[in-house]
View 1 (cartoon, rainbow, N blue to C red):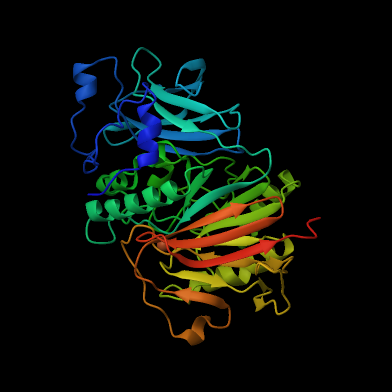
View 2: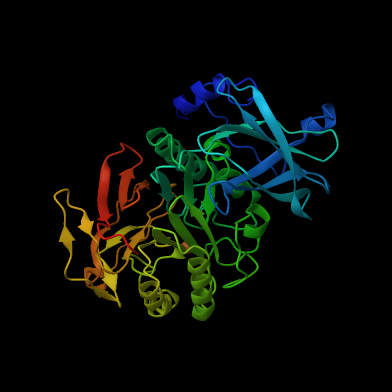
Length: 439
Ligand SMILES: [Fe+2]
């Protein structure tokens, strides 16, 4: 066991609406497959809600939710309240869920909340549309007016791939807690896919949802090769394009501040559909200063998956599209290793790069490819021979310990810094500065 997030403890202790944050150490996560719903039996006005997927929405004024309730609750609502800094409710609004479904013993609900203002404290709770409500959770929106924000990127948690779901969940929790303590004002988190090892294993999903920070910080999840159809039961991405689609979902996109994020479903290798989705996202957001692709399968990595047939096919197909659409960076997972490429264009290293005094690449050509390591400590892959990756990898490290990446965004720069969870030491840092940022 480990200490909880002290910053959040201080914050939540001031808010009487928050009911679940007292105490000094986390209990092991609960097993939704066997847990009895005490709430619905003994307290009919309390709705037992679990698997709360709180995620970025189509832009910074929206958030999406997916949540599960025990039993056959056909209706679901989210009540959003704006709070003052003392936690008093200023106003409330209710949003109806859409896309309810009945799963094995529980109900799935999805909703989107809109109209969020920057730098505000909010609370949310879930209802059944009648009298029952869940407990309340808080979150804070960040300021976007000056175009500066940061987000945190986590490589495959893959709960259940290591020494047991509880151990993997503890590792995942340690990294999420460490990262958000270090960057408490982070706008959101990204999980690089493969949330769990076995898609239909509820215990593993309970482990993925274990970090309590995930009700406070929205997290965007990518579709990995271990996620399959249940992904759609647990998550609710914005702007789904229907392109690159399978039963788990499709390519989707969102903006936050000045940046466009395009998430590709690498379970489908239809390059033309991925191209169409990316072109659509760019056309819908022509004003975005930065363009970032998020995708599970790394197309420039250094470990067991580096030479997979599908990976090489994605590289052949997607690199020309990234070049055409001026994608700044692709953030990827799947290979459980940390890799930062050189600036790449046309599958070749961009040779001429200017650096400023701080060492940042100035207006570099091409795209940067970053592969996230394991955030949970559940699994690591062996490195290939260096001849496989030395052509494109500026840094390739199999640390065999968990890390996370912080991405700082300003109006004219992107900075990627990877930290070890254990001691928060810097593994690698790289910056791009756009001096001639007309594009
Ligand atoms: Fe994977």
